[in-house]
Amino acid sequence: MTTTTSSNAVDIADLVEVGIEAYHYLYPLVTMDVTRRITTNVPPSAKPGFGPMNAFHHMRAFPDAAFRAVVRPNFDTLYSSAWLDLTSEPMVVSAADADGRYFLLPMLDLSELLPEPTARRIEARGGEVRLRSSATIVAASEDRVDVHSAGATWRAAAAIVAVGPHQLAHALAPGVAGLPGAADALDAVAAMRYEPTATIYLGFRERLRLRARMLRLDDAPGQWLFDRRDVIERAPDAAAARALQGLVAVVISAGGAHDDLDAKALAGRVHTQLKRLRPSFPVPVWSQVIVERRSTFACVPGLRRPATTALGPRLHLAGDYLDPALPATLESAVASGAGAGRAVARVLRHG
Image 1: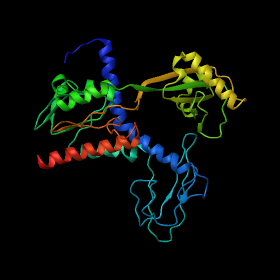
Image 2 (image 1 turned 180 degrees about the horizontal axis):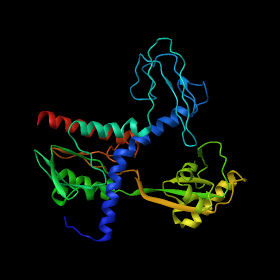
Image 3 (image 1 turned 60 degrees about the vertical axis):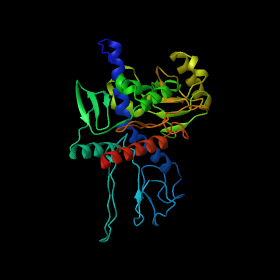
């Protein structure tokens, strides 16, 4: 592998680094948000333990074997849960007198649910978490994996490569890329095509009053609308400089006719859609369009996936693109990560 100091190479390295960090530390937030949407998109009292945000909802019977809202509930615990929106202001949570009975009231932000405890556990067991540092697998043999990161090479007993398919080539040095499993995986991902995700931000002089923070649109062209007043509240000076009082983000997943529009035209098309759906929608005074061109791989008929997730005896792949029976879903990503972890555990256990 050749090295270069060009600005383009630095940009690519930064992108790889961001992709790795996003997978490791942001993915759990995605899964928790999916759980939030499922459990709060239910009218009050319609389903035990489910209901709108900012209120407790109770399960007055123990979960049975069919309960799937969370992965592993305790079957001897009565749950009361609440999702709290702290965007506008803090909230006071009070609990009634338990009359001597034991109860537990944990309160955690989403990062504390998995990413931060996982990092602390790794460090407590002698491991090291490296942020803002890209990594390349430079050697893989029967007894070790060598990783180059932050200007140094260190030896690991095993490694899991969890990057997007378009980033895989950057994570493997030529000597590793030539291994049969790695070569097959690189051939498979090289043939993949990708679907974009476009996010159109519209800023308004007026405060917006929307019936929900997230709204489903009619796909012409926007699919989802998100109220992003939280951005204005976190950056009041920047918002004041543009005289913004309201901000929304409209998301379009996958490609379509909108791909041919430039940023200004796409923002205008989305505003026309919002006016059609709600004639009172104000005129934006600011807009920005961000398009992630390789948001996910295109799941098309006959798509070839890597034949194996084992690039070497101690080197395994994980990602949502590996299971030939699934598209790019949370389920496929979790399943592949669990499979890679079990494979590495077997190697470490048996040598």
